[in-house]
Length: 132
Length: 168
Image (tube, rainbow over all chains, first blue to last red; front, side, top):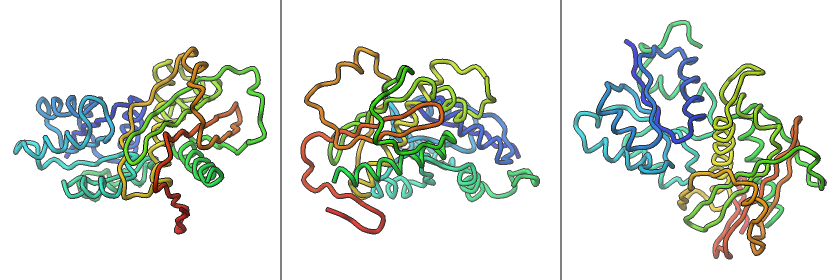
């Protein structure tokens, strides 16, 4: 099963880093879509079949938490797993995101942390057997 | 307090540069001369428990390596100005985001604005009444990075989370 991923971050460099990391992780990737803010992310979710959302929090136009709130209101996309990758340091805010079902990864991250988080969420079956 | 802030900022900056850009920096508080290399200045403002900003001055010669490493590009690969500035902004953003909880604790919230690269005019004409709470000077193989941490006003309950020890 190939996994379609949506990466939402206002930094093009960070999107590239995340995409490179998940490509190297052994995840059986299908399509990769990108968005620069929460609103663009919601548009991508409405236009494409997405299996996993990886999103930042601090973004212009619509931040990651607002995007998650909108996703939770929409029965078509409310069950899509979400990984938040952010510098967020507030325990209160992180716990609030976790209560909304998001998995939280702190920046700066290592490739292994992203791989392990995605494995936890999607399981081993979507990873190549040869992946570390 | 300035020394503690300096120590925390140095630690956070080194950790961020190593993990995101594979760059190793060393404290260089004695440096007074920037050398001939031009600099680029970026700044990120934050609001919340207290307000302020983090400003970074970086040798322009360091930026291609920083961006190339972040993007995983081969040596000599062409990197656009947009990519270089984007990489720099992301580094400033991550340093700021990681510094704030070490200063204010993890029970309070901050909103970090989108980082900006300052024009040479903006960088040369910073308000004179702004005095940084601390300055960290780092040296890298190809140049330097200076970080200026600004806090607006006098936060009433500013605390430094210093490992398990909290110093008020």
